[in-house]
Image (cartoon, rainbow, N blue to C red; front, side, top):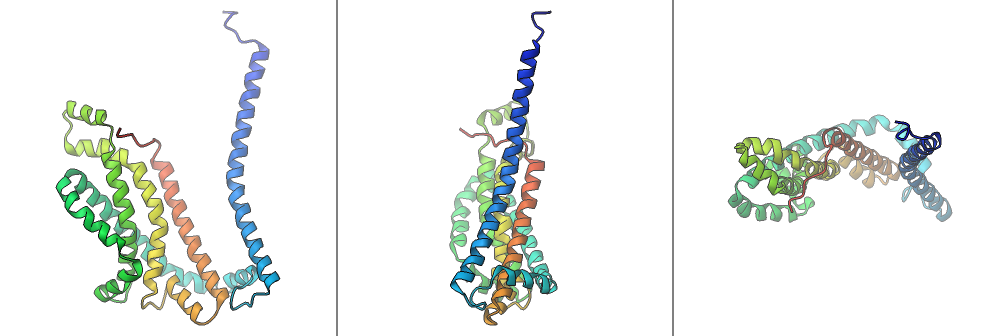
Length: 278
């Protein structure tokens, strides 16, 4: 028993090693948080310096101070226009991703349908968004519907591709085990395929969180009087560059928050790595 007991010097060395490891982990976390902040501050400082040194007219490129003042004084206007854009982006995000997940499920179980229609999906995805927008406005009217449709279309393709890949990349041995256990297709899907596809799905959802906002804004460029996209157009025509920059910042901030919300959901739901299909 005495031979198995650890010497005081050994215990001290282990404690010191553990404390050093925890300190390195804490330093790494702090570094990950501070470096992006330092990058943003450095970019703003460079922006202010260039505007000051080059004496850029305010209607061409405003100073960061002027944009900050505009963000404060026009906050109500910015939030009023952000609301419809947020509704369109979130609705398009939900609609596009739901359709992608549903169709991916069908494709995995019906290979003939995947072979027939996947090229069609690719073809539709190659059409530029600015070309789709007028068509959807003509079909759906001038309300929120075409903006939601554009956001949904932008979200659809990445999620479809990633979901199909995730559903198909199940370990063959796991599939064989499910067959040996006489599991039904439904049980295999929910207990094996879907769980395996979740990491792939969330990778696509994080992309879709940003692209949905872009889709909603692009949709608002075509015949809309409210929203972030419409405010961008109005600010451009009025040569109000401070308002233009403030609007872009608000739209980008919402996109970042949307992305972070999906990232948080991923951390809560996905606690494993996708299985390899090889």
